[in-house]
Length: 264
Image 1 (cartoon, rainbow, N blue to C red):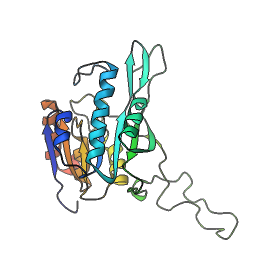
Image 2 (cartoon, rainbow, N blue to C red):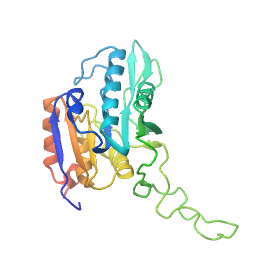
Image 3 (tube, rainbow, N blue to C red):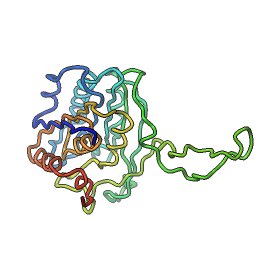
Image 4 (cartoon, rainbow, N blue to C red):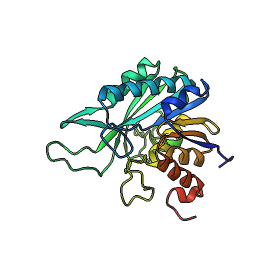
């Protein structure tokens, strides 16, 4: 890292803590809120109440963003009496109402999950990326992926014989195949639904610069803070469950190499 990052963890409800934070200070608000499906860290409520809460938090996120800043909401499905309700169908209108412009609906696909008996097993979730304004940061080079045919060349025209693809790799597109954090994953903690670090890293590298401030209103086990520290960004993490705050503090106290499950 070029500098020591500042990662602050706040134990509390983001709906109370976000409104007292200064406007226009964050480059990114990134999070994965509870899906209202009855996990141990949430109290199940009506879908209407969940939607109203998210609308409130997204409005605060938009207020906190600088011009050109980014909001990234990673969500899955709400299940009610066997019916699937994609939560991004709620998040996208809420972002637009808050004045954010939708840039991508990213499909995050993974290989493991619950096995369903009366419908196809879910193997993807989504990240909704919106910006505050049109002049925004987008760094493609740090997130390029290998070309399918890296040595392919133009076969005619003025560039005949030259490489036809970018030597750094190609645009990763809007479908990301990244393993989710399950039982044997090196990043696994006691939190039941962790962000993968690789997923957060791709967004942080593409949409922010070193020393930018990133806020996570539903920080869980602190993955956003771990990634921010690794890439020399500052972060404010908000988490209401004290046990998860303790996990986040432990992860952030480890050397960066160990945070990825790799020996120093």
